[in-house]
Image (cartoon, rainbow, N blue to C red; front, side, top):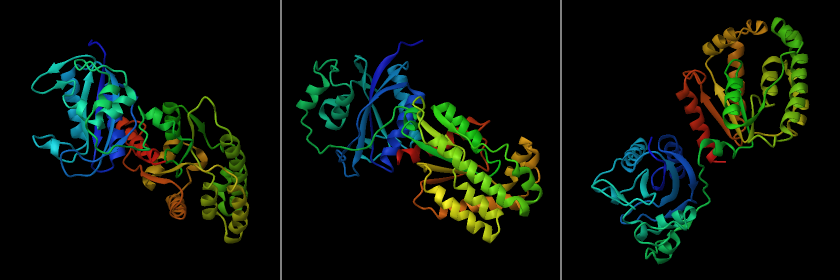
Length: 379
């Protein structure tokens, strides 16, 4: 096994969503090259040597088992994954992603494909400034000056602005930025399963809807007209009590909260099942309660087609659910769509789960997490 070594990398982007690109690149480096030990602040500066959009730049240090040449190959592949193709003129072109090895331990390497330390590091303040954030006392192997001194002596006076962007070492750290996320969906959409997976993987407090013992539910599926109002009122009372109890206090040992329901679902279901006069009365009670409950930072709706919903309902085998028909499920889906459209200020996401199996397919689960990454970064 190769000996582990610290490698200092410079990252830059001036095309597309620059901040998102840098963060995704860090996650990719962490997965393929080594553990991320530290990240600098993010700086913005004009393009150097050519006309182009401003760059976002940052530096990072990783601990890696990859020897320098293998590390270079890995980083070049990550660049290609982000749409970058290097060529002889690439130094003078805009780029989605630029990753350079600045330092690799105290090694000095001069080959046709790799120079370490980076030969232009001491003349670029967009490299030295972020590098000074994470390694101010690191001595250059042959210039015999630390990074702070190199920065002070650097003749590059191009404009460099420290941004408010924050980069995260890994997804666990990013998800800890959350306080509260609700994952909603139709009956059988997989919301509870996804909540449990996220809670386990990212140390979240799990808030699950508890309704299995509701005495009106089996009766409702037998005679909806008769039992709709008592069912919806009992659900509302239970949800309000449970939701306020579960979300009123954070668990000091958990990073955030994830819930498999939002209390607004009460109004969605009630609108489908209740008569006009009943719904009017119900809504008055609901509006009073809704003002008091905690709202999620992200409202994630798992859209599932009706055929898959019916198959999932049959598979989980709850007797009282087996009589649910496609029309009822379609009304629920439409109710959620109307709610999301009617609340544009809510931070809502809709994920189409029709072709995804996040339980048995890791890449599908990863796809969901990547979409959550992007939304969390915008908070």
